[in-house]
Image (tube, rainbow, N blue to C red; front, side):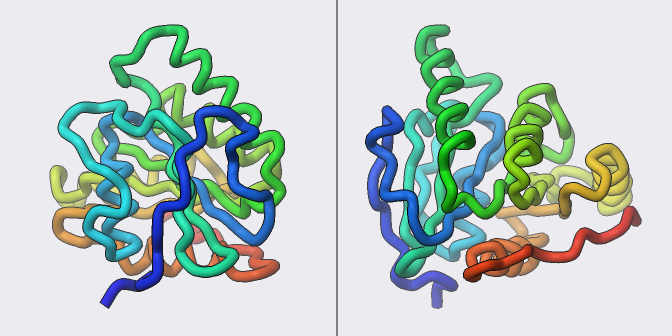
Length: 205
C-alpha cells in the first residue's frame, strides 16, 4: 500500500499567480535534469507514476503541486542544468523559482536531488542557498547509489556532509534497489508535520 494513498496531482504553475494557496505545509524537490528526481519522488511516495519520468532530461517545465494528504503537499520544481530548453525559458524558470522560494510561507523544506557520481554542482549550491537564505529545512538525496560501490558511495556521502556542514542532512538513495527510500520517506513526513522542526542532522561518517 502507498505511503500516501490519496496523493494526487493538483496543478502545474507557469507563473507565480498560478501557485496553489499558500497554506498548510509543503516540501519541494529540486534537482538537475538527469538526477533521477521524478523517480525519487515516485519511490518515496510509493506511487509509480505520480511524477512523470522520461529518458529526455528537462521534462518538468512547471512548478508542479501534488497533494499528499489534506493540507500537505509535495512540489516538483523544474529540472536544472542540462535541460535542453531555450535561454528565454531558462531565465523564466530562474524568475519563477526565485519568486517561489522568496514568497512561499508554507514551504517547510527542500530536497535537493543529486547523482552520487556528480554531487554539489553550481546549480545544486544555488538551490541549497535558496533554502538556507529562507531558513528552510534541507535534505540531500545522493541518487543512483546502485551505480557505485558501497564504499565509494559512503565516501561521497561523508564528503558531501562535510561540505554542507550542519545546515543539511544527506543520505544515499536509489529508486532502483530502494536504498534509502524508507529513510527519505521518514524525513518527508517529519517536515510535513505541523510546526515540524525536521530531523536531527547526523554527523559525518
